[in-house]
Each structure stands twice: as structure tokens, then as C-alpha cells.
Length: 114
Length: 108
Image (tube, rainbow over all chains, first blue to last red; front, side, top):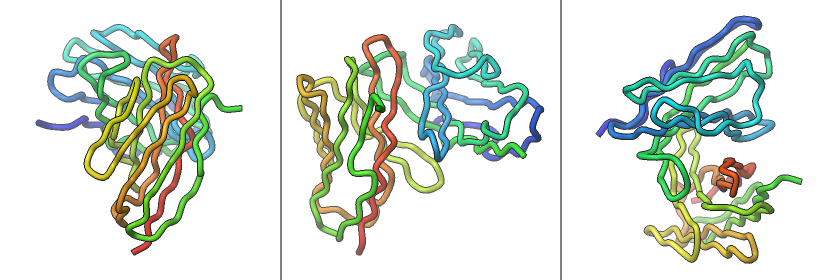
């Protein structure tokens, strides 16, 4: 069974540009969540999707957005990139959202903003 | 003050030692997770707890809901256990909050 796949693995963008990251969950998983990891702030929750609906959102500005498609694949978009957006972006999938459900993480996309 | 605090931040031990990593939280939770992150970024979910104790191989996780505290124990530690261990809670209002992590280094 394939794991969670994130593409691309590495990305370099210029300040002011926008970026789209992709996450393909494990087959049969309908919940996808996204996280940002930086050396200073550690791991922070971005958002959670289930059945194409955002059901939970962390404390990030509106420049960070996401969506989920009918096949459960998810994308997140960051517009008007800032240097501080440089981070490892991780997604995780689970059968369903909420407590009591095991999450499986992808390898992450490392975004560098220059 | 962070809502999820881990201690210690860094831990170096000799192979074979018994390891304990602590996590304290200040919010009501519906679940607590222990995660392991190896260099390169990959994260593995080790345990998911809402009460009591769980064991998987050499790893044991406990949670005390009344004291808002969880511990992760590693018995007979091995260099391959070297990683960052992260505690995460899902709060009562469904927010997900992470600790800053404990960097563990096991010396051969």
C-alpha cells in the first residue's frame, strides 16, 4: 500500500511569488491535514480537510489556503511568499478526522523563499 | 507559556539506557499523540492516547488526564532511536497543538 506522497520534495521560490504544494493520501483515506515546520516555531497546524470540506484551520494568514478534491488529493497554496514562509510543509492522511484516528505523514516539501 | 511543554529539550544517553520524555499540557484534550521525526523530515506516528498506557515493542506511552501529563519511555535504547520526539494534542475545540520536541541522541 503506497504511503502519503507529497510533491515536489524541494522547491525554491522568490519573495512575492505563489506556490502550490500537492499531497496524495493513502488509498481509502479521506482526511488530509497540513502542517508547517520551522526551526523557530516547530510544527504548526495549518488546516484539515475531509470530504472536500475544510473542517479545521490553524492561525495562519489568508495567504495560506488549501483545497481537497473528490479523490481526496489535497493542495495547499501560499500566495505572496515571504522569507518567513521558508519551511518544511508536511501533510498527513487518515481514514477520518478527529481524535482516535491514526495519521500517516508524508516526507514533506521543503520550501525555500529567497 | 506554550500550551504543550516537553522536557527535556535535548537528551543524550548511552545505548541500553532507559529513556523518559515528558509532555505537559494546559488545555482540555480529546487525544494525545507521540510522533517520531528522523533527520530528513519524515514523521512517524508512534502512539495515540486518550487514557491509560500503550506499549509497542520497546516503547511505552502513558497519560494521566487528571494531571495533564504524558510520558514516552524507551527501554533498552539503541542508536537507531536517535530522533526528535514530538508530543501533539487535539484540544477540546478540535485544535491541534504541538510541543517543541525532544531531540534524543543515543550513543553506541
